Every structure is written in structure tokens, then in C-alpha cells.
View (tube, rainbow, N blue to C red):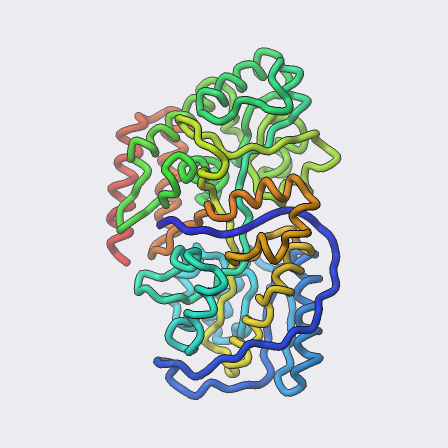
Length: 434
């Protein structure tokens, strides 16, 4: 399913204005009267997001003495998802978590941990669709309802090292990187010149989440936004999927990419350290690379090459969940809407460098976007970002894909067509179990 979201990069502090909260109501299927009162929320441990959240909470609390919000960072653990899942099991989740991964929603929903926003609040659907437009449809559960509020995203693009490109005799200002053949030709020139050890060096481990940093963004671009699973069936054995798989297989077979785990930061390290001449990242990459690499940004390549304004990519979204153990759900919903009004969404962009998922962001943030060319480039990807499919058995499905990828693409030890078709058959079975 295709959907649109928004994202960008800049890290500056701002003060948040006080804004009145939006209202809500008792909706069909809520099961009990919705009440107001104190609530607790969790936010990300990211320094910039903490600053944004604390400012929003302070603004709310100043205007709502009878419905105070207490906020803290998500408890440390193996992952945010593990911490949330444990809290659901224990029945002590906060009312809101401002770091709910779309990929984890099916599991949280299966645990009974999430509130059905579509049916619990009279204005649940209208608020979300008016703010996020068609983007909302990409986050619906199989029953058609929303159990998460679209919040923020980071579209992925291709960064390139201008110095490494110039040393390889390539155009460092307007490189030809729109097609797979273009990238392979650049990779060959870089290898011959020795201007970088590798052309591309995404995370190489077998962890299923790493598919989001190599295959998936490129597949989304090449397929026009097709998710890994659509209508209950795997999509990556389509002609577009096989083109992307063959491209990556060539990168590894020719030594343009490394299947060995990087000794430093697996995501940003190879490009930031100059080991790889290209890197795949969202706008957050700019802060990681600034001062280390002279870089440029281009849309992700495809088999035939398409313009930036038509290139789909991975959104890497994080959303807001309202959790079932919350006693004062009306306040939770009112605070959610308050935190996503135009002023607070603009502050989110300015403070964290991440785009709110709202259709009118280019209007809300026009002055801010005009002041940063890199930001404006990422903003062009706004209508074309896609996330992971909302499906049952998601982790098993992605791991099945990643295992096949390791054998058929990274090492080339298995036949590509047979291995990926076998993985697709297994994924079809897993998807049908939902």
C-alpha cells in the first residue's frame, strides 16, 4: 500500500508557544465513559526529542491543572519494543508512547495493549486523516482501523562523498546515480581509483531490521512504493524486486559492498569514516556526516531512472500509541492532538530535524524549509515515503527475507531465484496466519 509522509534534517532549539487543546468525545466501541485526569507518557531517549517533549508537556500543564502530564524516557532495555511489550504484559504501560514503531503495532495489538483510535474517539478518524491525509491508510491494521497516530518520519536518500567521487574522476556536484547501471559504473570507478574501500556498505549482519537499510528502500523506489507484503502475498519476486536483488547481488559479487560486519557504527560509520563512498540514510544522516565528509544527496536509484519527485522511499516512521491500561483516555487523546498542532509540529521539525506526518507541512514550515537547501531536497520526498506493512508475524516475515538475502545476495552461495521464491512461499504462509 502506498502512502505519503514527511521528513527533514536540522538540529536547533526553539521555544514552544502555548496553544489550546483540541477536544474529543466518547466514541462507539469505547466500552466505558472516557475520563479526564492525570496521565503519564513515554518519549524517546534522543536528546532533541526529550527537549521537544518536555517543552510540550510544560505548555500543556500550564493550561491544564486538573489533567497534568508526567513524562519520562522509555525505560532502558534491549529495545523500546521490548520495554513496551513488557509493560503491556504487566499492565502498567503509560497512556502514550511517542516512539511506537509501526512494525511493532501488530504484536502490541495482538497483546491487547493498544486502544482502537478509530472506534474509541468520535474525532479519532477525522483528526488523523485531516492532519496526515492518505498517509493514514499506510498505518491501518488489517481490520481497517487505526491503532496508532501517524507522527513523524525520515525519508531515506542516497548520500555520496564528493571527495571520493572527484578522486575517481566522477562529477562531484551532479553525479550520474539515477540508475542501477549508473551506480555500478561509479562503484567500478571508485574501486579502480581506490578513493574508498567500498561503494556502499550498509549493515551486514543477519538481523532482520537491516533489510530496511539496503534492499527495502531501493525496492520501494524501483517498484513505485510496493510494500514487502501486499494483499497477503510477498512482492519481492516481482520483476522490479528481482531487478533490485540482482543489483545488490552484483554489488557484493564485485566487491563494491562488504558482507562483513563493520567494526564501528554499522549504520553511519562506513560513510562517515570515508570507508564507503555512498551511504543510505534519512535526513538525520546530515548531522552524523557533517564535518567528517563533504557530501551530496540524490534520490535512490532505480533500474531505469526516475525523477526525484516520482521516487518512493522508506519513511522510517515513529508513531504515537494510546495504550489500553490508560485510565484517563480522554486526556490522552486531547494531549495527543495538542502535541500535533501546527505550532508543536513545526517545533518538532526545528528541534529534532524530523518531519511531522502532516499534509500542509510545506506551508506550516515554509520559512524554515526555505533556509536550508538540504532540508528542501528531503522535503521533495514528502509525498513518496512508505513504511513497513502492518501485518501479523512481521518479525518472522522480515527474518525469513533476511535469511534468504544472506544466502542468495550477500554471499551468493544459493541460487537467487530459487532462494527468494522459497522465502516468498514461506512469507505467504506466515501472512495468511494473521
